[in-house]
Length: 171
Length: 175
Image (tube, rainbow over all chains, first blue to last red; front, side, top):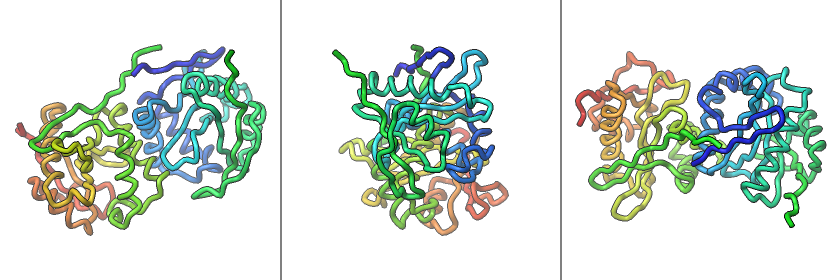
């Protein structure tokens, strides 16, 4: 398998690597993710981290780590996510640190990742599932041109479908 | 583009079995098991999304750690019978030898046959002295198998859970 790498103006989107664990762990245990995912243990954080790798292995695609090229720091993840049991393939994003916010990083990464799923994975449509309390994520989805489609009760808690504009029309 | 360094499982053989890298199709029998009451000794029952998380994390051990669970097929028929391998999430004190056999394949010694091959592979590949099995005290079937493999109960060792029966397998000299 050839590892895909996506370069944008300021970011490198790449496959996860073992050395991302410390930053990912810090993110999950910081409480930053708690409003959406609930409180967390190191064990669950690790399961989620290892599952990034398993998803790539099992599906042949997966979520990219967002690396800030200027610093080399991993600051979040973005991209296609499709566990078994999911309603449909999802375009996801997450910034790991408060300090990474407010610079358009998630927007830049999500745009590139959406382009990737349409061009490289030939997705016909893309959706993001967002907790109704996650105001920042909803704002980003809206900025990306996604629109609210419906609510789903979910198995754990309700979430909202935000449908993205379709793939670019090729001539 | 750079070349990925994804470590996948090697393919190993025993008299009757083929041990190989897990694939997407292996998820269904795992999900069936996890949703049933048979999974009570393994933290179940679980829904599909939770089972995926666990399964993907275990498969993810291969690229992340260089070892993990093997899926096991019966060589003659190609039929999937379960998985056997090394489980090492961050909260386990050390790498665990574990197994899962689908209901229709039980009672034929497939887990034991595959587990012996895995122990041999671990010794030859990594040179580890031992592997442990962490088993719920209520899981008599798994305890019996671990003992049949030559394992010895060692309650001085910490478990993955305080209740666990910890069974230690000596790998030295396996060939």
